[in-house]
Length: 303
Length: 254
Image (cartoon, helix red, strand yellow):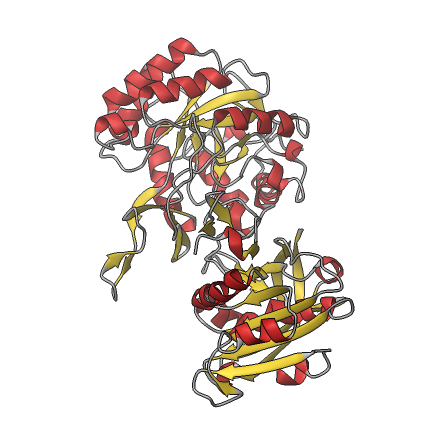
């Protein structure tokens, strides 16, 4: 019998598989496909304080083994989300993670405080890749000082554990990760999507009204793996790896690179029960390779 | 709604880039209602990554039929499916045409838009009077007339832009006259966006209720990715996959 449980220090998960924000709706959409109790945890679609419409279409374009998206984080606002969470909580005892967004530091704080202390909420994941209206559209994730300031402020105000989700679109991701750790982050997740573009030659215009879009899917796996390895070597808090994971073997590679747990993203859109298949594959691969527990593998890359 | 591995039974080339695909799915064939669609995995590798949406042409338990046109990489791969191939199919998805009885329904199909319209005629013909307007660019794009013959239709009007089949014109050429003459109280339509716009100009004026089956660029088909949105008059962006694909034309901000 292999042991799939993982310990983030402040919470133990029954397995390392966590569907990622924006690819798992509010959880309840997946009830027709599987029991949410089978997951390690799951993360709800990113939420701002107020209702948002999102970007004008087109919002996606396929790329070789990948997907560009410019959805624009539509959502019902935090009050409506609270009702949804209370409903989803009836269906599962799996830890629920809120993905906290904000156009200003104050908005991040308002949203984090609103969900703080809700028994249904296990972790707050800070999506620091949101364009910040007071920083000329730059996101906190692009600046180590801004990341530090924001995480510190939120850690001082809430008691729910904080996961900081990093952007890959930076020069030195370790500097941002270290800032988050120094500011008190309980764990770090990476990576968010890579900025990309798609163009229409005929009209000489970008495909997306927002011009740039975020790339995800199997195409980014090697890039994400490198970033996870680098960050895990530079911080002492748990790292939750993600980027193009589609198989159990992918998960074990991220863990070997230093991740304690992983998030499953784009594949959820293609194969609703992907996470369940992946959990099964992790178990099978561990048996094959005679890995008794995941701790034995975390960060044990031989270089 | 289920994501199952299904067997391809037949993949028949009708004409040029138009095909009929027969899939074995006890689950979907027993549950699908007119307007519903399915998402088909077009490759067993990760390239292309996303499933593709297809409207249901007919259910014949344990089979479903899909009528499709090869328009890009995804549908090109579907056209290469062989009997016995196993593919991943998610469905049935989406809402459906409204339940109506004892009405005179005008069905309007443009090109491959005949798929959900054919399914609707099959299910609605017993309890309603059905008329059909079917148009396309030329006779090459206007197919399956043999399959329309067994249907109980009050009126069948065919149009082509180039006059190569039926009357020269498009689905709106005699729309006003047909609605008024045949006592039409409601229309169901499926076709390209510009067709919906010109239909709506007529139905709005005549105050005929009109339900459109919309197409959109879809990521997942079950409401997760928020890609396939359409602007509505009162409710902002709505998802074509789960709020639709059938919309009351009055709700759309054309």
